[in-house]
Image (cartoon, rainbow, N blue to C red; front, top):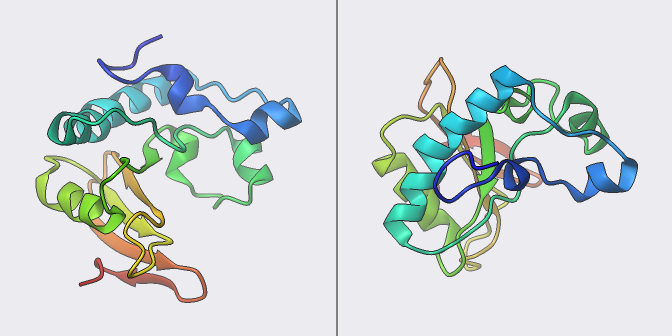
Length: 151
């Protein structure tokens, strides 16, 4: 099932952990609508701008799956409102800055596990939700969350 021109439900629900543990990782109708909005407002604009095919590393997570991987109990992934992604050949900090500066609507943007001097380290977490806080954070192992993006 396509959620948008370039992204499928399978891509947004795929999880090796869910498959290994036999966890059903399928969204309900509200979560499916939220995933469609994530694709339209976050993934498709990035795909269009960079013109490089990519697949998200994490999209929807059922509450049970999220618990199994140690995710936050308040994770927007469980609502279908968030996606983690990288684009091959695009430095992750550059992608995060592009998202911040060019996406029309988004709620939260986190540059996760990025290491200075390692351009393709980490990933971008971006969410689309009714709140639209436009919160920008960087998460570093050992340091936690800090406001803004590096540099």
